Image (cartoon, rainbow, N blue to C red; front, side, top):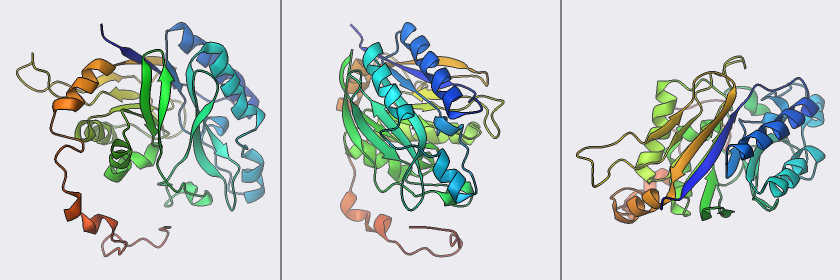
Length: 293
């Protein structure tokens, strides 16, 4: 019998305050549970509706500690609902706040804290501290233990992000997002899933949120099946632009069988020949004055 891991993508419009977002987020998680979700995922920086104040004092005032009431409320809710929750927020951090996701397991334990590594330093995220690493953790679900990692929005545009998570053993990557999900960005997610043989679930803000258009998506990375003469579409869900909760169902048994037998991922890599990938020199035409290591 297929093991269907259900991920609820909470494609929601934010409110006008943290309290509104807390209340709306809790209600959405309850609804996701009623749909049978194993994991509920928020769009990027849900606590503030992806608002990064220019003024440093205002930014710090908007930021939240990991042990804040806002964040821990979702840990308590996860335990109550017996459902994992990936909550996103502007995290209190020095010297500048971070763009962070905390993943609580079905028992309410925080098993993953991930801060966005590839901050958009060409824009307002120059006001944030970048994360320093990618992490993969075992997540206990009703389908058993699943290895889960995270990327946030712009991380998607670097093949290294998903590759590192795959090398750490990730089977599923959760991707909070806040940007227009047009064909090329969707193709990036499709490519990351395909080349690493991993599931990717992305939650975006709907149309109505500035510079966003919905189209939350899920890809299972399974391009070929024995009973099919050609390749299959790895996209198992693409939402429209409307506000709502969209449920992606990942067939874990099929994905794991595929990973045991297919040619992608780490099956035939030659890392000893990839030394240039860790070279830090940047040459024209890619030199940018606002680049931060």
